[in-house]
Length: 174
Image 1 (cartoon, rainbow, N blue to C red):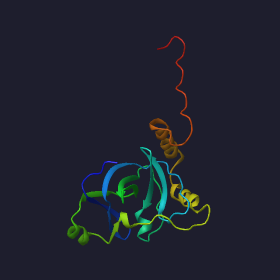
Image 2 (cartoon, rainbow, N blue to C red; image 1 turned 45 degrees about the vertical axis):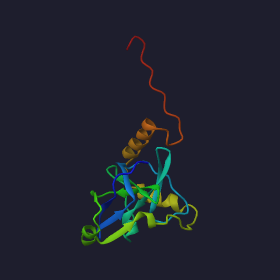
Image 3 (cartoon, one colour; image 1 turned 90 degrees about the horizontal axis):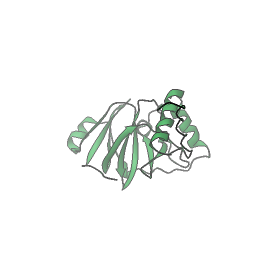
Image 4 (tube, rainbow, N blue to C red; image 1 turned 30 degrees about the vertical axis):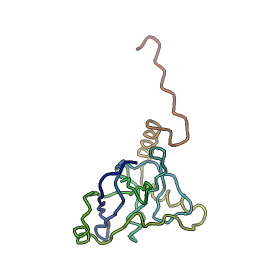
């Protein structure tokens, strides 16, 4: 994973601005379809496959003690490095990525989160991850979910299903 210069991600939360400090930023993409991860902290929304690597996606709102976010088709995931591994940061509100200047960041933020210090695992009851993911996705419309599934089929077989065959051309047509 190629990382860029050291920077921080500023996220707007209900309680103010939170700064997330990763080891580096890789990419920003539309919210992919997530898979639930058992035995994880409540603020781990799920995970997805990015270029053959499992990327857990975290909620900064939940990490800051706010309620669980709801997914929308316009949400983003900022993929960053944390301790040498990729981690996704769910972003439902505008995001700012800027060069790391600790004295400037500290004056603007309510909470500073260092990704490489987070522990994702926790003992949870069976099915808790599926329920959390279902609550997270409950506001996504069926059309948005279908669009995510079609995108997954188009760009790669992330769902484990075969790609649908291309429609055959009608006789006599090009």
